[in-house]
Length: 395
Image 1 (cartoon, rainbow, N blue to C red):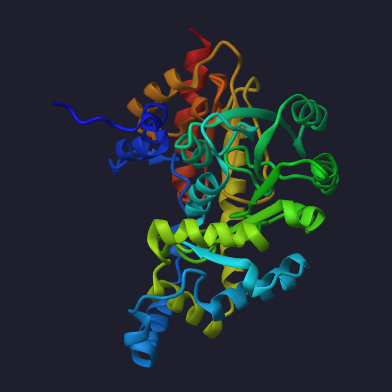
Image 2 (image 1 turned 90 degrees about the vertical axis):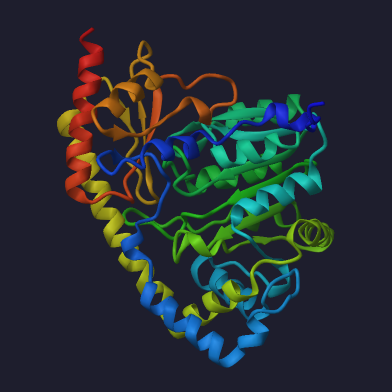
């Protein structure tokens, strides 16, 4: 007899982006598809030195089981950095170390979501969150994004007409759009949420990757306190392979998260936590991030200039001031899925936009990643893609 899978598996599909990445394993394909940091910027030598020091000074301890909350010196470092970079007071006790910020989403679902509960997300929204919350058979509500954040009128209407457990948002250089909430929109979101029985989950993996424009410091959680959770990660500022993220929460929420994590994996890798802590202790993370900003800023500029030269005027593209992504909107009559098939034949790849929409829209949109391609590849890949778009428009 066939095995019986849980009902939840019928509503969750393979990650569209992960499946695309299989196609792009062909080295001849110029890929703008993955949300990958540039591996040339991984601090390999410094991390190697940190790992050696950890092995020499805390060998057995670094390989032992540890506390669920995480390595206390690393949690204190993260708390101190929030004060330095964001200007907010966070205690080490409020920080829970996780196996990447993706695990935070899984823990949130386990702690808060019952089957059929409403989850409010941005439109378009982060695919990893859509996939994770779908595991809990959530019902998604979406709020549209304007150039400086969510449409507050639409958000207020959604909040007034529906009960939602969570509002999940990427407030800085959003994945996939690259858009950033203005200070006014951050305050507006907080004002609309205050006093309501809804949790605001503020995911911020890209916040320190600003390479132009004015730095927006306000954290929405700072306005909401107990009804806000903040997520962070070392994946974009150190190395994603370490799978080190964290969650900022307090009180009963923190206690429930610890229970859920204990049931999931007991704790995040002891060795990885100690190595990252040693790395940020012995080296300047600020200096390393400056290198990332300079490289990504240059790659972004090359992509924008190539788009201006090779894309037809009918294609609208965001101009992010940081992060890793651009977001393109084709004329309504065009399908980015069809364009993708043609693009692959011309050895260039991107991510069609439809999977970022839970309502089936977004057929004419797509995402471009500029962080993981050299400048010559960006110029050539955008030219190929522009030629493909022009060919489609001429049919």
